[in-house]
Length: 424
Image (cartoon, rainbow, N blue to C red; front, side, top):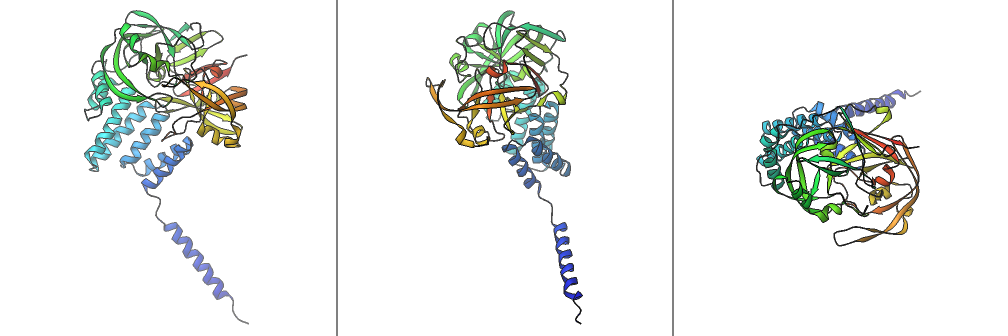
């Protein structure tokens, strides 16, 4: 009888050799792993992207791209000191690797941006070197007029009454004057209308080029210093502010909002430095020193392009909505509609006028009868208009949580986490 073990053994040996070939295959390059992380971010898979970048950062500690991406993730997760440290590591690694001077300069500029955002103005002034970038030159100039760093001073907790009206607004102190400011979590930096800036006698004003507002519109901006600023009873000291045309500030709410448009808005640059609680039931806003929120009773937000994005669940799908107390109406973006079960087929014709620079436009689609869940808040029977927004290059924006829904719950923001509790 013929021995059949020979061919069988040969097959086993071949399989073993193939397995050995697979085990010896070189791991993905740093660039390939970072590309996968960037793709995950573009799809809104933040945790996956963060883990990929953490791994590649540990595997390639001297790689400037890995360090730069690690800084991006830290900034998105509101870990400001980590973001600064990692971008500093990226600058050193790029210099040691002999990268072109313009690439090192861009990393250095990004480090300066992070330092300014964190209120570390003395370091920012030394880092934001003139490089032909009008915005960075303006911010470097302003940083030299500010204290070495932001140091809030005052009571551990202050509660202020909200003023009557739909927009959360309360009285702040500016240059010895008491004036109403709106809380606008959809704005990256505290902003004043030009006439309001003149009234408050801002100092060291200079052009900072052009910027995009929350609706994707381009507008001219100045940067200036607001002296002796107070949030309630908390002394913030000299504070950098953006200054825009009065009409541009009125356009920050696409749906018009209240007839009386706020002339000054508190942005995330200040709101991120404290624990903020907006309580519609008490008609008050509380400002405290940050102390964190328990993960089991809050959600991790993502900071992208100066906006706070909160995770929202609709019909089992995770979406990312801008948490925007300055928007009178909640809405879906076109990218958000496509993420819903049924996609484009869910949007039905409607009629809603929105504000635009040209005087107005019409939203002709909306998605009805939705159930939204964010943190401990659940909103049923919600109708969301579909608003065209530019597609985010780094991270998607699927919609906006406006004051129409946020006014139905108590909202607390602290250290990049948010807790929404529905009111009885």
